[in-house]
Structure formats: structure tokens, C-alpha cells
Length: 138
Image (cartoon, rainbow, N blue to C red; front, side):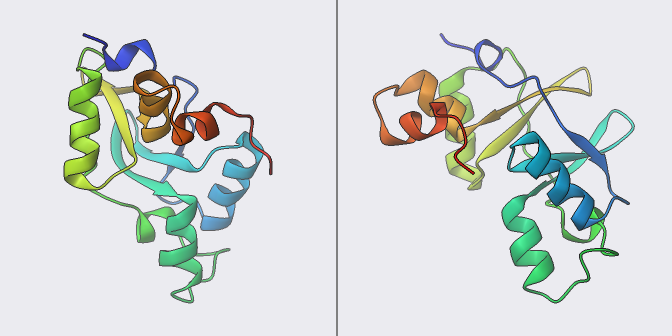
């Protein structure tokens, strides 16, 4: 059995719910990532993706310089542990229609596993794995 902990990302970017959409977009750009985990102390309260900023923020006319992450974040985040089976994690993504799962240990965020991580691990010859393994081009 391959576990989530064997290939999860541990380089995480977390932000507070009071941070602005602009701050999150700049952090995503600077870190070459597509999401930030929104926390309150050690607790995960949500996740915001670059798509959330576009669809829930910009498209809805929010002022990206004053609107906060708490206004657009996805709540009720589905999580896994580092000991969970990778196939089970993929099944959770499919069931809940999500592309990222925060990895929690004793209530504390320790990693993140994405659909791309799973593709690289489980189906290394797939197109998604090939794209996910490449360096960002933008």
C-alpha cells in the first residue's frame, strides 16, 4: 500500500482569512502554486485556489484589494492523514469533486496532496502526471 505521506507536498503556503485576494494571488504567483490553505492558528478553515479568486472574486465584482479570503474560501475541507492509502485519497477526490486534500496530523496541517501528485505516483505515464511533473511555464 502506498500512503499519502510518501508523496505529499510539505512546502505549504498558509494565509489568514483576513488576508486579501490580491495578497493571496501575489503569494501564489511568487510561490508558483495554485492554492493557499486558510488557517486560524493550527486549524484549517478552508482553501482558496487561483480559480476561486477568479470565479468567486473577480467575476462576482469583488474588490480584490479589500475582499478577504474568508469571503471566497471553500469551507468544510476534506482532509486525509499521511497514513491514508493513496487510492483512498484518490477516491475521496473523486467523491467530493476536489483536486487537493490537506494532510492533517493531530489536528495540525502537515502537508497537501493534489490530484497531480497522485497522478505522478499512481500513473506516471499519464498526461496529467507528465504535466504535473514539469516545471511551471508561467
